[in-house]
Image (cartoon, rainbow, N blue to C red; front, side, top):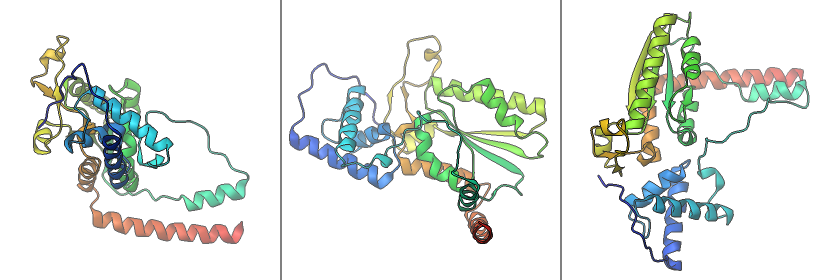
Length: 291
């Protein structure tokens, strides 16, 4: 386990050859493990001991700046980098009813959980990681709930309220940073959904999927010194902390996939996907005849 250290005051400028070594690593890692966040690239670079990328915010800033340059230069595909912290909202519109019907047929998705006794949700502290996990949650038709920190009362209420009168258990897997703020945010979410569950007679099963002490140790994740600035910070029982972004992208996707497959095994998913494809083809044939 490596610890995120403070940055020295002076740094020599990287040579052209060193910048190219960094570029080759960043491009190769991002393409192989896409989608990734810039911070995941930074952690990967520190673990790989890429020249000049130290375990500091200054090191992160170097990666951030070089990733931007590589994307603008056309060397790093834009879609390899995930950023779900900014998004646009607009109603979907069509040129006419025929186009709307065709689009509906093409994008048809079957409710994979219609006959299940549970509703699984993945709650995520880091909004930027939503794009990293969405390929998994989308495949399994599971809601992904990025909170951007502490969960609002409204967000928690809406999740539990949607389950009223369904007879299903709401299963929540939560992913938060391994630090005082992440722990408190996870506790806050747990309290809210339990409280609304009791009020609305909705069974709620809450599980802290990450980030845990054992994961930090077993995965040998990069860490940073724990904050001790406030009384709340000083209640954190460890000398170090770790971010969700420190988990390699393929690993965090596997963690989420394994959790979901506890409730929808791969063989059952495969069967439901075949049914979905058959229903989509039937709908396309129907639309094709009438439009």
